[in-house]
Length: 89
Image (cartoon, rainbow, N blue to C red; front, side, top):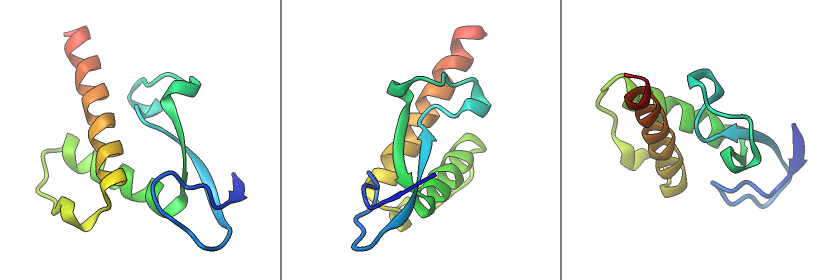
């Protein structure tokens, strides 16, 4: 974990912890390659995973509670997982 303010999901005016998020999560067989990684703050990271899990489980979630980048990352992760599932079915 690095410290900086280059979160690609939220704007920050102070130094915040930055984490590496795998857009197609490793837990769902996503690759550990640079093209599948993005640097986001811990809050955005948590939000993306929460929203992604809700999408995968078909839960109703008010997506308006999340910023556009968080919604986009969760949707991209969902699409990657679903494409993977379709390819092995």
